[in-house]
Every structure is written in C-alpha cells, then in structure tokens.
Length: 265
Image (cartoon, rainbow, N blue to C red; front, top):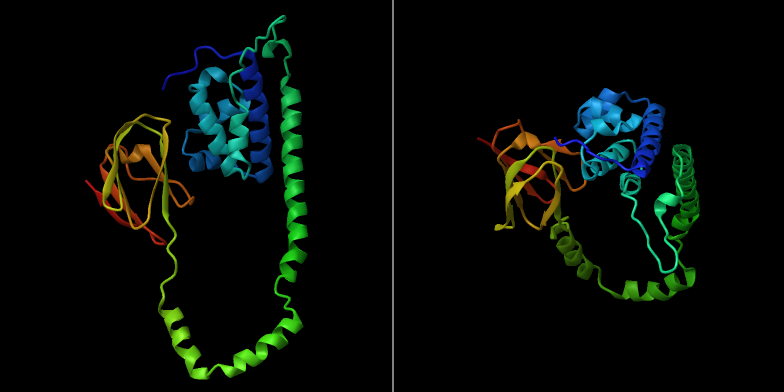
C-alpha cells in the first residue's frame, strides 16, 4: 500500500491527538490491540502507528480517515466525528492581509483536551436526555377519562361479530418488510457485481479503501472476485468478510433474514 510521502505539521498534530484519544478509550474498555484489530479487520501494527501518530507507517490520509472512523465505532465513540477532525489545513487568503490557518498552531495537548471535553459533554448530554425521556414516555399511556366515557356508548352499539373479521384480517396481514441495506468496504482491490431486485445496478473494479452502500426491497445479490478483500455489513450489523482472499463468492440478502444464499467458486 502506498505510504504517506508528505504530511503537514497540523496533520501530524491532529493525528497525535486523535491517536491519544483512541488509545485512552481502548485502554478504558479493557481491550488489547489484537482484539481491536480483529474487529477493525486490520493488522495490529497499523493501530500502533495510529495511536502513536507514526505517519510514515500509515497509508494516505483518505485511508487514515476510514481507519479512524472504524476504530472509533468499535470503541463506541462517534467514528464519523473523529475522522472528520483529520483533514488537510487550507490556506485562507483575503484582501488587504493574508490569513493562514498555519499561523495559529494548536499543540497536540490542546487538541487532545478538546476531544476529551467533547466526548464528556456528549455523554453527559445523552444521559440528561435519556433521564428527561423517562417521565415523558411514562405519560404517553394516560387516557382522558372524559373521552373514554364519550366513546363507551359507541363501542357497545357495535355488534361483537363485526369486530371478529377485522381481528382475523389483522392477523393475516404480514409485517412490514424492512428494506435491505448492505454497506461494503474494500480492504483489498476486487471486482464486484451488484443486482438489486433483479436489476444489475453496478459492475466494476473497486480499489482498496473504497466504501459503497447498496439497497433493495426484495433481494440484493453481491458477487465478488476477491471475497477476502470485501467486507459486508447487513442493515448496519456486524461487518464480516465475504470469504477467503482470491475466491469468487456470491451472497444474496432478503428483508429481515439477512444472508439467505452463498455461492463459492
């Protein structure tokens, strides 16, 4: 994989601060590097480089952002919010005076403190909202007695036999189907073909680090030429590889049942 040739000072400081946050969160959860690496589907040495901010051991920034997102999600953090902090620093120019983002440099401990405060505030806010939601949920079942008295005569006037077919029809109706959503991440280059509800929606070669999401109503079939390089997550569930590296695998998904068919070649 291509390594980073040049990394700005700001990116290095951002990476150092983000790596410290991820390392502290991992240690607080009691997980080892090997355990987290098996969930993120990368080699442990990449996580070491990320936690220590060793840029020459990491891939291009676009892949580093994806690694930060997956690492944060595994630890129960907001992976998208964390990965969005790792960006290139643009130069801002104005009339009369030149403004540069690099003119004010935030040191790693400044960024680290900001991330810690952000996480603490998010957790506190979530706890506060959950506590407020408890009495609101408990109040929902309350029924106005006056409304019950007004409706009672109308209910007694309806023959009991009329309600029986309605109940039977309700039991016969099938539950609403949840649409199929499959998130795909390419940890290695692979050819892939996607068929949604009988129509071919995509066929081509996607490179390592690419991410895609396909959806369907009745069935979704994904066929990959390098099953070990393709990681699938059905309806936001746990991500797992399609198969072994170098093998051709076809998987079909249906609503509420997940994978119903798998063909290895």
